[in-house]
Amino acid sequence: MSVPARPLTLIPVALRELAVARIVDITAGMRRVTLTGDRLGAFTAVDGTRWPAFGSPGFDDDIRLLFPYPGESEPVLPLVEDGRVTFAEGRRPIARAYTVRRHDPRGQELDVEIVLHGDGVASNWARTVEPGDRMHIAGPGKTRGPIPVGADRLLIAGDDTAVPAIARLLEELPGGARGRVFIDVEHVTHIQRLRGPAGVDITWLPRDVSAPSRPGALSAAVRAMAWADGAWFAWLAGERSEVRTIRRHLVGDRRMAVSAIDFTGYWKREAANGPRVQRP
View (spheres, rainbow, N blue to C red):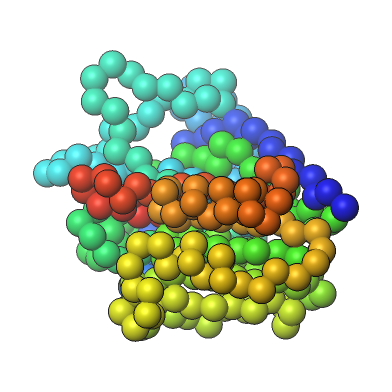
């Protein structure tokens, strides 16, 4: 039985100014920042545009966090016209994409989880941010539907940057879901307890203790897994080349349909400034 692709829906992008409510360390390498503010609800912008309340129906929805340039206190903001982001002449905004880990519309809260490694603008911000600090966000600009009903087995594979989306996906799966999850993280202390159906097996691949503690550990684990019969759906996210390698294996060796594989390269290993910590 073929598995259909998840439908894609575009959402008009609103620019919202929020404030940091709480900061919690999930692991030694992951920090959760909770944002709050009236503009998570419906509001009227300065130009008179009436924006609906923030929404995040998809487990891998992402928003853009907007950061100031070094030595400055205010970010360069994009222009939003008719629900689309445009850029004025001059410097572009410094934006980083992050998964919506949790959205509480009643409490007007939004959680993002940031990997604390490297020297990236978002990691540095997460290390020093304090309650009350302001943050502008934009998005989500699009959302995808849930895992297709026709899928009776799931393959989920990602690295540190994909953990927030994987965690949310596992929490939202139906109780009878079956599948395998592989997560490549930097250190054994970065492993966290994830909640999901009993039929979904989670395997952590900490790079400091795993035998294949090198690039390619995630794809090696997927290649080595026992492949049961059934209609599979795969969700892959993390370093771009690793994700592409896994996708090629699934299409070429496992004969999965392209429509049954969602894949996103959150960062690129060759980037001079390290990973673009956490898209989606």
